[in-house]
Image: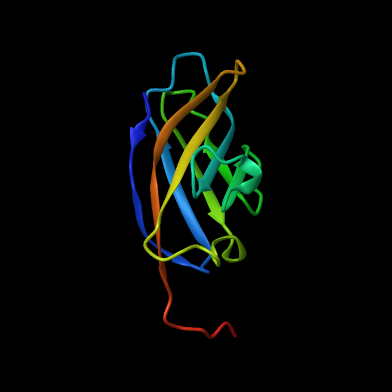
Length: 126
């Protein structure tokens, strides 16, 4: 069963790091891949998402699975680039989820909710 958790106070146009801990991973399974997808409408195609970050246990600009969950608890972080969040509407509740691909090929969505953005005050970038 997915945990419903809202994320508030994300500043549109900032680089955002989203840390995720997953508990209750079934014995014998580990996390192979993970996605964080943020959409205006959950039924939209992934290609139409505001942002989608896909990660593995190798560090990339999109993030990394830092603990594959062999002990039942996994950890990861996703990085949402400022260019991806720049067009987010203030105070709109975008749908998001975290989906996992497990070592046996099964898919599991442990986290769903709404992500709310706010606008920054400072325009300076250098």
